[in-house]
Amino acid sequence: MTKVSVETEVRPSEVRDKVLKAVSNFFDHEELREETKGLGVSLIAEASSLRSLIKLHSALRQQRILDAARKHMLNGRTANTVSFMLHKQAAAVGKLSFVDVESESPCGPIRVFILHDNPTGVIEWLAPKTSRGVPIREIPMP
Image (cartoon, rainbow, N blue to C red; front, side, top):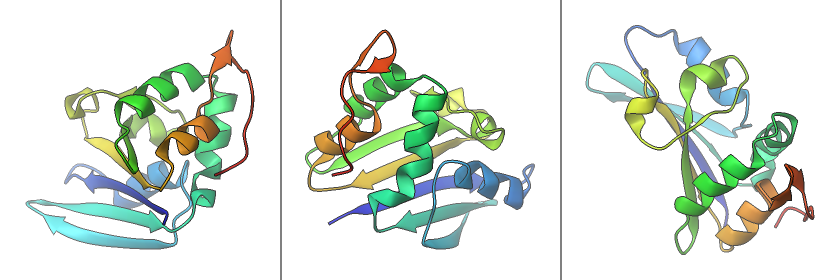
């Protein structure tokens, strides 16, 4: 079973379409919903395939941040899930920046949850080990 869920809040000072663009820069969703939370709204984008992560896969290589991505993904790995957070403002301008704690992204982070039977395989596909920043071996999507 595969489920990709990307969540972020739209704060009162933010424009919904710009926040959605920040998410869409790196993820293709099949379903988008909004949930009211306090004074704001949360956007939740979901997909049922790792194909929704193709933009992320490409951006990690183009921006040459595979090692940082791998570290964050490994830290967020459990038995069947990979989770990590991205800086929302950076994502809005097409840049990937991983954050360790929510406060590192002043407008709140983009939270990514990947449910998959083989989370290690997902990490190996998205962010393989590198030598001098170049993937040692590319593997196919699990």
